Length: 273
Ligand code: SF4
Image (cartoon, rainbow, N blue to C red; front, side):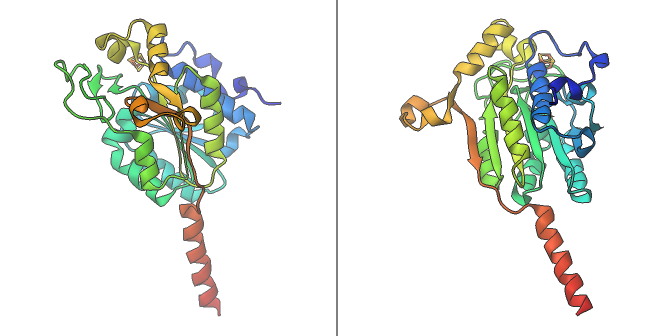
């Protein structure tokens, strides 16, 4: 039986993330999801973007590609179309996936490319000094919104759902087992799957917004969420300001490669007729 350790590169540790950063929990959940599926490492490709979370590929014993900022999804789309037998994972932060690369996210979901995007959303650009991103909540303090952010933040899961993703799920590092299970479910769903993890950046976002130390920030992020099953029994007023966690969309539909291949097959048949 496979173990998460089988997919890790322990000789690359210690990692470069700050003490208390949520990224390490997500890293282990990714490795755990691969182990749960007993996947052969050679059948998995991981594409990572730029940013603190982008470094997740340094610690995984997989075929990995580290690409330019915001372009992880186009690179992963190429891999998924060139070799449809691969399980393609894409690891990005909120800056990478929704700010610089937001357009790619929308169209990847719309096209339903067969890959699984794992997004660590910590509401800021951690690696470059804590600047605001497209998910930074209104009123928050960041290094580029010192008097309070005036823009509303994206809801990544709603965006993916509206654009047509087959599978959408959300969790937090408070619940690593849920992250692992969501990634596994996403990887087993045909088409575009997106797992958002409401992550913790105690060094920048947490410090500037007075979330307390890493442990308190983890707890506060957890308290901002409610399981989707419980939310069904709550009023709109009770749900105000809360993020739903769990499986938010599970509507598999034919993926981009399969549709493309059908056209190729039809044209070949017509040509030979
Ligand atoms: S800056 Fe923030 S996101 Fe980056 S490693 Fe440190 S705590 Fe994590």
